[in-house]
Length: 301
Image (cartoon, rainbow, N blue to C red):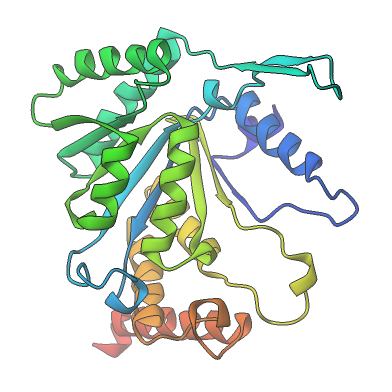
């Protein structure tokens, strides 16, 4: 594939076209790239940069900063199923999930390694074994087996019910959350609520050591085009992850600090309670980046 041959990382913006109301083309592009590049490891960082962004009154100082990690290939395969007697009172609908040991084992081992590489020691597997008995029992067994080879990690297995309660009660205690995609989608929605809203939504999807894509997961918001109202922070957070993936740590730190300063000063778009537009937010971030670079230059010392 040309992307794999010629690029190390890809930044993907929102996909959408009002001429395709069901968004089918966007799904085909996203899934096509994901499966052809084998981007089996998906993650997003949930970090609250300032207490005003978190709506939970009891967790303003909890230091929310965790990774949500999802299996990204088998979870998103077309589900086996169909309809019988469609459109009648006797209609039957069925759909089945499928996981293989090879894919789950590969993913969970990478998750433990990712936690180690990022200095995270507590890793939680989330499941719904009471409903998806065979599927999630496989995940639990493989997670337990893999944990024995990472003795430095504090591993835990919880149901999605328990996780949601804890996430809304004490989110600061989490470091790495691992889940199948369907469950991870639910956790992601709650996490964005904690983090500041859908304007910060993005996901990093990688084939470790091969290639990574960094995608803004907000809708394309075609109706907002030209109105200077779109939230740019999701794109900025995706860019930070892209820079870290390329081992450009210093550049990533500069951009992240600029984003943090902008958010802490409440220089945000209207969807986050601000009074400025997309362009103004971008200008503030660029100004903070310029200030950092100037302070580091030989002439400033």
